[in-house]
Length: 132
Image (tube, rainbow, N blue to C red; front, top):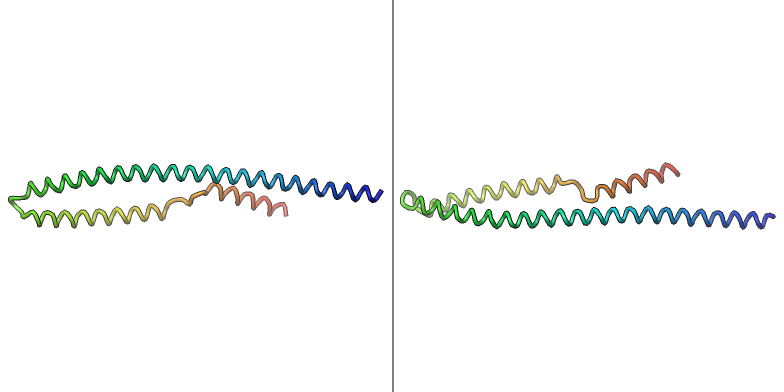
């Protein structure tokens, strides 16, 4: 009778391990799917930002070139064109420096990617620690 009991216990432990591994695999699979979805969202978001930024930059440069030419033409008789171009270049450089500093601050203060995935992994870790 003890042989049957030890076989039942061994079979029960093996079945419990299989169930545990199956549950763990399902949890990992779910978390990886969440990470994949978040990655796709990040790629989509950054692609949209890059395209919009490039289009805005092109049209801003076209506008800037037109305004520069207009200012040089309007001030041709009063002030020399070199002085107007120098003033405009200094102003453009100051604006560009300000924009770069704001861009760096925005990137530094952006939320971390995969925050939801990390939170789920942390919940899983806490649940496993509570059971131990």
